[in-house]
Length: 285
Image 1 (cartoon, rainbow, N blue to C red):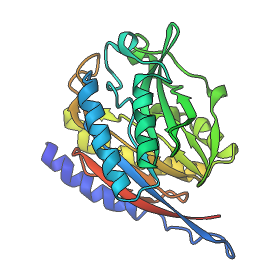
Image 2 (image 1 turned 180 degrees about the vertical axis):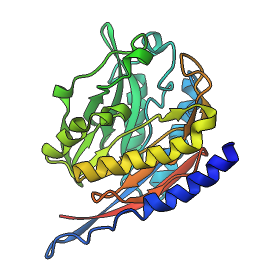
Image 3 (image 1 turned 90 degrees about the horizontal axis):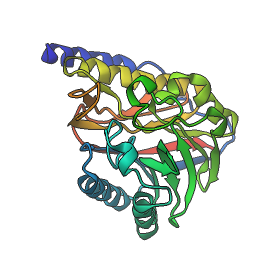
């Protein structure tokens, strides 16, 4: 069944990729290029040391490929359904974000990464954007946390707190995974002046549904792009099973995706396997 689904998955991918043409932009504008690296990594549930090692390896590799920014998936410190999230989350700034900031500074690269966040008696599923100097310039707390699944793990952020930041490569915003199920959250980033949306994911499904899940994921990213008019970078996790909770045993499909503002999938990662995608976004100023 999985093999048949996989071949169906490959066939649908062709349809997804060819679904829309790339725009040539407005006449008279000057193209600008942003080299984006997308890390599709195996996040081992609860294994902070292993996940930090994998993240560092990929960030260093992306820097060696002259990436301007490297984007990692949702909660890559512990895993997004880690059952001891409230006990083990770090504050921001804190141990994990300091580790990311140090890498950004040493490697002269921008980094976007999802991680848990402890703030007083609250715990959040957060994502941060770090500049080349190692400064956290943007933080987002997941709004749609799928509370039936995660209310015992962390608290919800607020749509009122959606922010963007003006960077050396233009205005950028962040949402996390299911935040985009409410498209107004994604559109808010565009309304605030962004041209690029970074949206870390941990898209999971039952084993038998993983191939179809991969197609749904890529379609999900391209739909966000089409409905918002933004470039959308969607890193996704892969390989390891969810280790605890109601989704124990579920798998992540990989197929991390970058989509253009017209809703075209311009590049995607391997199915279920770790990958590092590097893509030059040529945009109009």
